Length: 135
Image 1: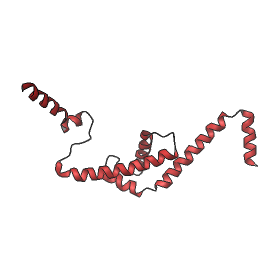
Image 2: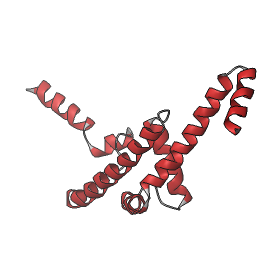
Image 3: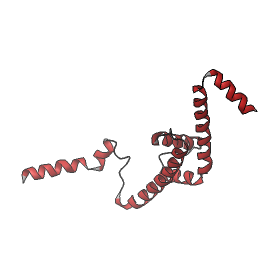
Image 4: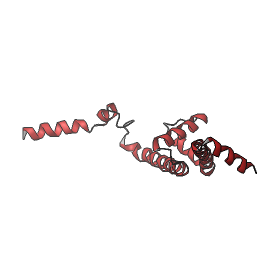
């Protein structure tokens, strides 16, 4: 009985919000009263953000999930949107033209890919390709 009590107390200490926050597993602890509102905005933001990330990664195969998220964070900062606020990010993500953002990334990816391929050609082949493209 004593071991069970000690083990239960020890395990319980690891699952407390304060301990989880100290370890960096969670950003903040929330009250039960506010949990529905918090998770509504959190899930809505993640769905919108993950959709944009999937579109970006589809047009640029070199992008990782982390790279895509960093790109979104950069765009949000350029528009003075607090990346840590789920409500503000939802409003901003809903206002974005996802197709235009994806097309911009696709164009950049294609340009860099073509440049890489071009640089792999021998010098005499490069000149021939350029002259055939100009014709």
